[in-house]
Image: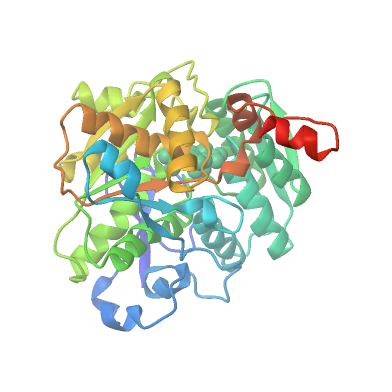
Length: 399
Ligand SMILES: Cc1ncc(COP(=O)(O)O)c(C=O)c1O
Ligand SMILES: N[C@@H](CCOP(=O)(O)O)C(=O)O
């Protein structure tokens, strides 16, 4: 019981239409459910084991899904870092604990399942790394060929390794992610390949379940959900899901949606701070957090709406602040994340220092990808292992 609806002009399309941009105005589409037909109660959902598929009534997949058990990721209370920042209720939702090590698996279990449901048998994406790793994993599981376009020289090693090992056709282009996305979009339209970037409305349906899980694990709606933002699909998806839950009556308010970007790739922050109606594309985005090295976020319109309609905000952090938080999460909380993921918590540290947060606010930072995704950045930051002769004396001498 759903249709596709343009997020800008409201034009409607049937659920089996393979359309990414509205044919009338060119904007993106979203899945719209007839929520009056969903009769399951929140209490009944809570009886099911925690997993993305617990929320199947709010998802469009009608066939046996292509799944590797995504979702059900841990929500950690950041006691030490919270104390340092003067925050008593600071949490991290560790999306790096999904099967391929990032939140993209929530999108790809949906995206690849929908490819199957719609009779498509080749999938493709452009990627700063995680989207391609995840798509390769789920395409392998489904037995579908996968084509990946990466910005040459700007993708973390672990992610390239995953895409290659899971059997995708991996192509590096001498250009940035934004150009790779334009190219793959064109390829998919002209060759009937199913596009699995976040302009695919079904993919984002999977990602909205992050918000559902946060509410269910916390036992209430947090005051604020904080996400690192690149192409802005995830923040839009979480907001969409929570709006659905508010409409159906599972929750009675929305969290302040808060976007954190790297200083060198911050068009959403610029639009929020400058009160602009839309983002101005950043031609040369640059940051150590390669996952969010994106200058033309395709979901920006939805993200700006999510932030503005919830009284949220957007903040940027420097590469140094991102890397410091990556280390602090690892050393004080035992949580290993990649640089882009640390941006959300780094943003909260900055906002706390600026006096913008209430000490008792319930804040959930989504940490989006695992530490092992980007080993090179980790190795550059840490002292190398100490090499010694194989004797006890030598060992004791360095301890
Ligand atoms: C680890 C990681 N964090 C954050 C993001 C940003 O998500 P989005 O593009 O949905 O804003 C991405 C990808 O873009 C990512 O791979
Ligand atoms: N970080 C992303 C880039 C955006 O991809 P999207 O399809 O989610 O918009 C990646 O991992 O490639």
